[in-house]
Image (cartoon, rainbow, N blue to C red; front, side, top):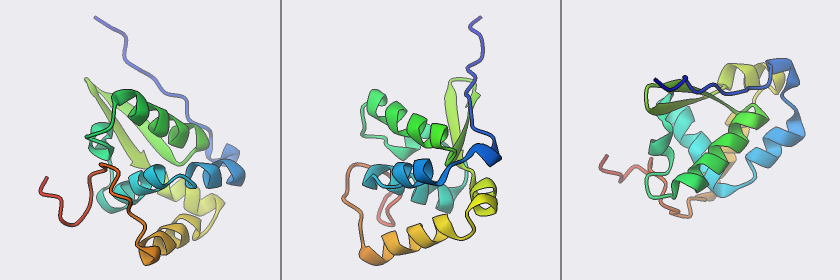
Amino acid sequence: MAAARTYHHPEAAEIALPRVLFALSEPLRLTMVRILAERGEVDSLELGPDLPRSTLTHHTSLLRESGVVFVRAEGRKCMIRLRDQDLEARFPGLVRTILAGYRDEGVDEGRGVAGDEGDAS
């Protein structure tokens, strides 16, 4: 039997603003964070069902390493959730403000990411 996957996450006090802002600066990752803010914990595959696995892994790893998300293995699934409490404690209102601005601009480049209101999933 294979060993369970483990993931390194920065401690809440180690989450740095420049890394968070970099992680949130890419539209695909920002869309992933919006989905997590709306849905809570999801299988990482739901964040980019049409993306190559390597691309999805790259973006979710960057979000995890920056402290934006928490990832855990559940059998063959890779469950991911927003670290909203840690982020709110470190940078009050930051994620909420960024997501509100993202919605206001109507920035959703339709890059194959699930979560749009018209999505039939």
